[in-house]
Image (cartoon, rainbow, N blue to C red; front, side):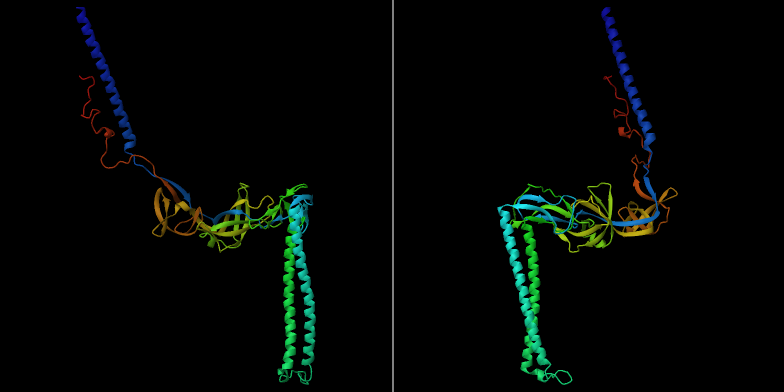
Length: 439
């Protein structure tokens, strides 16, 4: 009897468990159907609508410019160089001090190399000076000969044989060899005198050149130009070592810099597309990496239309002069230039993104009464951000600058069930709920 009761209890528990499992499955399926139906009602029938970003046509000033990069040149400064070598014994100036061309900068107690170079340079100068003195002496001699020959010619030319009583030349007599000979002697003496004058000019140039070379090797270092001393690091006891170039000749070394009062000059490289657009005197705004957020003004001084080629790329240097001096700007600082090539006032302007071109025709999209219409336009000047509208639009018109396509399910034609993912059938695929547990 007890065994029968246990069997009945086991069957009852199994039936109860099976009934509970089927209820949970049914509830889960019903929830899925409800969620799918709600999603279909909310999202399934909606059509994606584009959103528009707009702007108004306005009147203003259009500025067309060209951008280029480069650096601050050394046009307003010069190096103080020397070929001497030895120990610095005197320093006559200090940084930020004003000097004039030829002023002594420092003096050096020469070493053996320095003495040899100085002696050779001095000997060359003395030789050039002797040549100049000799040329001057020859000039005096030639001048004397020229005057003597001229006097002989005038005596013959004014004689009664070669001059008529009224003072006019006796042309017939002046054809005689004696007259020609005297005339030629004078002309030759005059020519030699003029040649010697040119010889003296050449000798003077040679003296100046050799003197400059001597100054490079001289124990005293001189200022090459007038200006303000910068970058001077010499002090008494500093050692200057002899420098030699690749060819074995003496080479100069830089010991300081002299900056003039001239305003800085910036050199930028223009592309072959931009170079023809830029003209002398075009206004420029400049920024330097060393001073972020600060803008300088200037103008184009000249453009090197010969250009340079590097790695197959041609660029054209443009030279820009700043409008005012700037003590904080140093040579070789990197710079970016915005060169203004054209300015047009009181024109209709739209953002560049608003204008589209197709088959050579420009058009914009205009918003009217909540609807977008395509309007043909005639354009003018173009900057990096704006375009001039010559005709087709009026001030205050609302135009489309960009379109944002909304994402969503696009439906059309026959209404679809939100449960299409299940093939229009139940989870089991046969139109009915599959049984669990094998019953």
